[in-house]
Image (cartoon, rainbow, N blue to C red):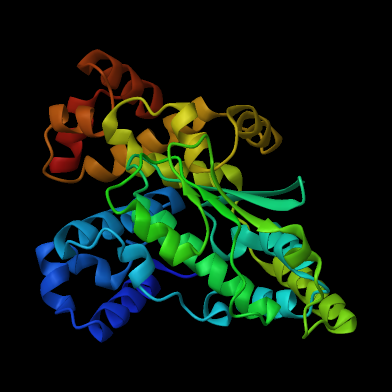
Length: 337
């Protein structure tokens, strides 16, 4: 399965804003977002891509002067972003079952979203977190996500007027807060502990008109089969790919890498151990590979030292002696002959 790429979202936002009369090319140039039209850079990890999404929403909201941009950009058709998963939801018996399936397979269609479902006091609560690397996720991105979710639930249920009973944001109350009630059709609260949306349990247990148990079972099996065929790079390969983009910032922290992989440090250690390696060894391997690559270029030894994240020349020199049996200066002289 393929989740919406950055370029998919950019195209959708451009199309929606153009319908509303915006000069979208001018707007994107003003926001410094021309380069995002081509999507994320190859090799970017998903949290870096998530930061690009956040930059996109924040910059466009500021330049357009529309704080409600996340709602004014129309939600994509549910089947365009969810694909097979959307058909599985349509075949489910009720919204609760459909939403449980959505959350189970959410990493396949939107891997930077973390969500959970709970039942309390006659309500179904769905809590949501959008993950990023270094950039704070803006309010407008949560607005768009809630908008997509509500439109999807309406589509699956066959009830165009179905609305949540309450919505909570962790963000401070904005000046445009009254407009949120109009868009979401329910009380909206800010400065909450979690980003949550609540629906009446009776809405979520009502049968879905398109429910088809046999189709649901077949689609579920198909999802599982597709998951099994998806090639999964080893944890060590994922770590090395991340280290390549982090090494010039100094000694990469295991915590930062595990966070970008969306796993705990303990899980990272365990998976690397099962592959016969560890975090320090991978850092060493990446530095060795980059040293061989950069020694043929025009970078000075001092530039290489910093580029490879070494704190001082002696540490870099000892590493080269261990890897190649020669100092950086000796390697450089040999390569320049």
